[in-house]
Image (cartoon, rainbow, N blue to C red):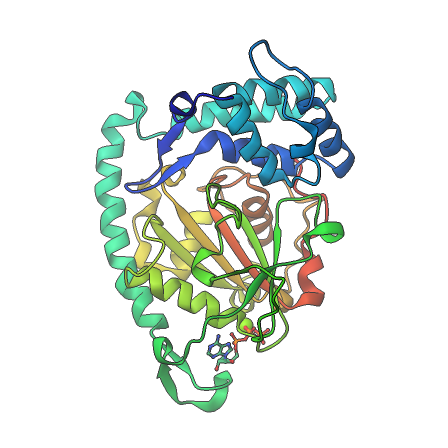
Length: 363
Ligand SMILES: Nc1ncnc2c1ncn2[C@@H]1O[C@H](COP(=O)(O)OP(=O)(O)OP(=O)(O)O)[C@@H](O)[C@H]1O
Ligand SMILES: [Mg+2]
């Protein structure tokens, strides 16, 4: 079994309050990039002895295990060796491209770590600036989301969101068969009536893994029919953060709607420019190394998107200061080329969810 104390060594502080195992997130990202058959072969190898002193994981524990479940098992069984074992198995299944990606991710996380001595100087300044921006952003978002229109948006009357909000039943959706091969989780906004067999999560827990909650889900796709409460859940999530009620480990939040993005779809922006366009209160973020902070991006209403979302042909972009089309920015953010540690929540009516297609996250 992995040694608990040593397996904690790769836990880094990302942002003032965030404790997260970067290694687990890296491995999870790699596993999501494996096609179903390759993932099954990966699990088969985990049942064989990999490195001396590392116990194989029993087959019974691996069967039917999801990718996040496998990450948790690897941490339990292999501790600090889990990255090396991941590399060994990836080589065996001829995915040297992913070995390289894992290694790049490891060096990037070391470079981005505020614990890294080479970053001591600039980080101190950045932290103060980030704190100032956060202090400015919270009241601004509180103001924006504290009241919500009664009924559908055109009634004109505003109500305090906290008075009208009833918790929405969110269930883990049909990830099997539909989106099993990439890392967007399907979460379905179920009807308000709770079914017994389902496990429900609250909107404030949207990024937490249902079992154990030790791993953060990086991307969530929330599907639900018109009027079921997707937008209102987004607003409540943001309001609860802005008023200090939940998710206080998050440093900054960016909320964009596809309706608004449509209006600028033919313009050129850098990611930082785009964010400041929608969130002017974050003026100055260009001076922060955003990879060192916990960021949440919410994109509401994928069904309204007029962006091509061309995951196949769009060029790769990893520089947040480089100007490009809005479509390139978005596809690279979703793929994880831009801000690989940022959390993403996309909402959509069910039929439009396929605009983020299968198997396009590799690369
Ligand atoms: N959980 C809830 N608590 C209180 N009111 C709700 C809730 N869910 C929905 N409503 C009411 O229904 C209206 C429509 O909800 P919302 O805008 O969140 O739907 P949606 O899922 O985003 O729909 P669309 O697909 O059309 O964007 C809200 O303005 C609100 O009045
Ligand atoms: Mg909506």
